[in-house]
Length: 451
Image 1 (cartoon, helix red, strand yellow):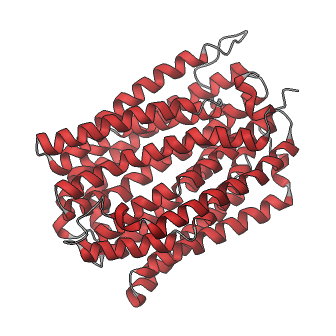
Image 2: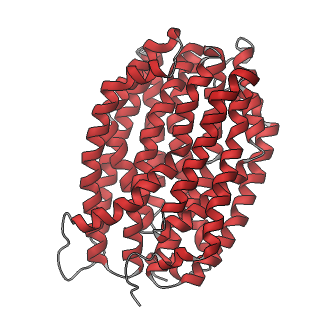
Image 3: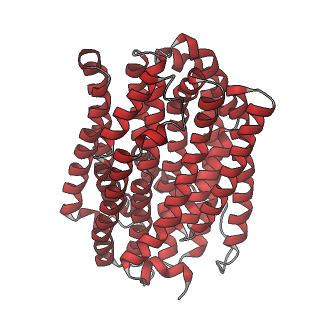
């Protein structure tokens, strides 16, 4: 069987699972990659350093999700052209969005470098961690173009059905990041600055290798005419999908950022515990988001090939995958919360931070299936290019989370901040599912079928 056609011909359950699995593992390594900074400074520098990196994480993760969401949205065209057998157009689409996102990443890096101190102040970042948080972000934003390059390249690998390549690259860069973190902190004593420097170096190396591999892989797709390096019509079509995809991918991160000021009011210990719990939640939602992204590519390729019934079959199978992951993660969150939180902090010397993190993690573990249901439903709509309703659904999700955190936490305590999370996920899912049931997404195919 041609490896390029597995999502079009293999049993939908098998095709989706084995396509999603490298994406899940890769995204887990992405989270471990990001989490290494928190673990190392939390254990070897202190709780305040952990809080500083945690305060920075909510801000940087918004930019990471913009990169991931933009790459996934733009790569819908790549998937549909591949499904239709239009390799020249597929290559043109890839080149167009690599150039577009290179420019966007430079602009966002400049914005983040210039304005991160003002953002941290607006979020009421505690004074005892403010300096370290600013320092971490200043260094991090210097490497922002590498973050964008890697994530857009990874999205294109996934769109081409080659999800194993980003996994291998993330394993490599994650190991490199951890080694550099330890060297910078333990050998050179650079603390928060050291882990930021390590992250930038690891991201840069990974981005350059990713680009080289993609250029080599594209040679196997033969075309009668050379592809264009830029096509404004493709850019416009892709942007219409990419913007809602950016919003969908960024909802969790934007919600974290906008609610962080509510958490900050409870002090640096509470922020440290919340940051640890938030990092672990990010790991828990990885298989949910990755499965949703796999459904998006599956939908795009099969619609490109004119196989609408196969899309529905894959969507139904995805529910079983999500439920399996959710049950496993629920057990982990209830039984092993203490040892996983102890990776971030000395639980004996930081009891307030530990209690906050434990309460957050144990609560959210019961509701991870909701973000999975939302992710796969949004995945179908995104893969079809039917983006308006699911963008609105994600904005409703964000509004619920931010409003409850902002207005209810001063009255009822910090726990209200995470009580709002499953409510937002549920509202998002119900809106997207209602639109899926109308069947109108089937008429949104972006390219003509190859057959």
